[in-house]
Amino acid sequence: MKLTIGWLYPSKMNIYGDRGNVLALAQRARWRGLDAEIAPIGLGDPVPREVDVFFFGGGQDQEQVSVSRDLQGPKGQAVKDAVEGGAAMLAVCGGYQLLGHEYRPHDGEPLLGIGLFDLVTVAGRERFIGNVVVDTDFGPLVGFENHSGLTHLGPNARPLGRVRVGRGNNGRDGTEGARHRNAVGCYLHGSLLPKNPRLTDWLIASGLGRRGDGVDLPPLNDAMEQAAHAAAMERAVRTR
Ligand code: GLN
Image 1: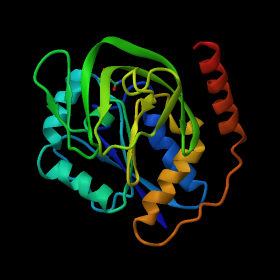
Image 2 (image 1 turned 90 degrees about the vertical axis):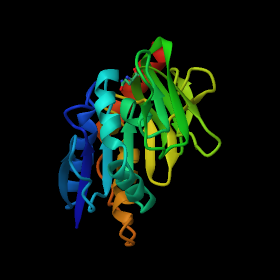
Image 3 (image 1 turned 45 degrees about the vertical axis):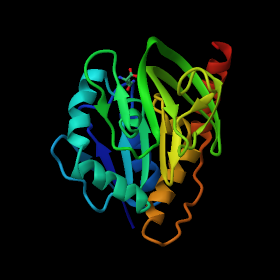
Image 4 (image 1 turned 30 degrees about the vertical axis):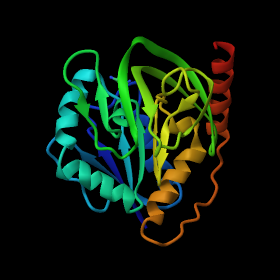
């Protein structure tokens, strides 16, 4: 069986180690004997129909301008259709922001998103930088955040979880990230997935499940991943 990972804008939206998420998805699939293919989807590229899991990383405001433009029209609709059809998605920070309705940076015009998540992000005066622990259905997720965007969830948005350490979506309402079907958006850089294997496996199984055949991933020896998770958790709690 093959897992196709659609990597959105790898040269534009890839900061703070976010590429590690793509490597974790591919490697945990390969460790189960799956054939994992990474399909880069850059500016002007079409969205391949066979994508099982999308990854959309973080980026600075100026990179988000061209990416926002590229996502308007058929391309953004193709991503939405794929997620509505069961494809999985992990979007981090700048990528997460552009999956909402719009992102309003400090300078310049608002950047249109694709409206996959019912949310709006507005650049704030303070930059949130630090370790984060979020309590979610996948257990506590650990990472770090570096964003000035304040994300406000609309009535149709479901948060990824509640902030235990850090600021999260906006530093006020205690939420972090958003979920819709098999899509997860969040502010957790790090990269996130190598230290949070349960979420990685959920994304792989959900993406493969879009074809209708339930997927049961055999367990792996996650001793190293759990040690990294514990170390990040200890650091987050100690430095809060
Ligand atoms: N430019 C956005 C912000 O500052 C996203 C930054 C990021 O992806 N880390 O909020």
